[in-house]
Image 1: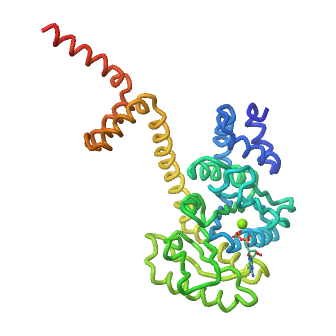
Image 2 (image 1 turned 120 degrees about the vertical axis):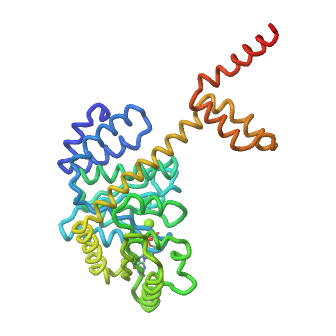
Image 3 (image 1 turned 180 degrees about the vertical axis):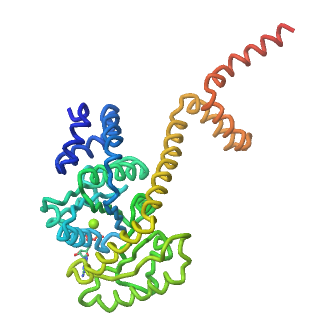
Length: 348
Ligand SMILES: Nc1nc2c(ncn2[C@@H]2O[C@H](COP(=O)(O)OP(=O)(O)O)[C@@H](O)[C@H]2O)c(=O)[nH]1
Ligand SMILES: [Mg+2]
């Protein structure tokens, strides 16, 4: 099976084989330990092959803002510039195989038909952290397979934006053509994550509203203090439907990557991203192991009970749990030590 031949799979990937990419991602998403091991071998072998030329772009925005339509339009534009496009998704709400985001593949019908495009729905199930990790790994595999524009679509709810922002080179926030009270993105702090803000649906009756919103966002963002070292996000408007303004979006994205490559900002961001990812994984893995640990599990109910009843300080309960985790043998020996002590006492 594929699990036996990660290097063969890598060869096919490097040749740009779309089916090999689908297979590699399936392998990586599998929970089977042998698949996981093969996938990690594959990734380790793939990493040194990355040239860094690929653009990794996350697109976020509330449902209905036009993400899928935008990605198709932008994707087709990328293809017309000779690029190869992979579309991935982060959607923690998709518990079934299809995935809610790209389940509506109909919206990307034209892109899906193209030989140089690859579309993959969100991995389903698991924590957001797990989904984000699998998406980041899929992005690496896609880059090795020669997809030099990797687009990550994410739903604009909850934590998925933060996750997406932390694993891309450019975080593009798509906003609806409404201003005033509806500068929601700013209220929710999402805009601060954005490297680029694009007001969509700048067409037909919505054109004036879109232009107005664009101006409002530009103004609002000029008042925000930019994150240290980061440039203020570019604000644009476009129509994903009519493609009006898409060329300007493309130009702004190209300029972003050109300047990032020239001044080293892009590489710094990627380095920071890898380190953050590692730290995040350490936290997640430790937490997983901690809660799964037999002696932690054995002690937890009683300690929680004691904290609940106000009989034990939280700090002490935590220390005892950590002790169970770090020195399980000692903790297990605890009973033996107690018996030993009482035996001693009885003897005296
Ligand atoms: N007028 C207009 N409608 C758009 C535009 N982009 C998307 N839509 C429409 O908005 C609806 C939601 O689009 P979709 O791409 O599925 O949004 P998503 O949920 O963010 O992926 C669809 O009916 C689209 O046809 C646009 O630029 N202009
Ligand atoms: Mg969509």
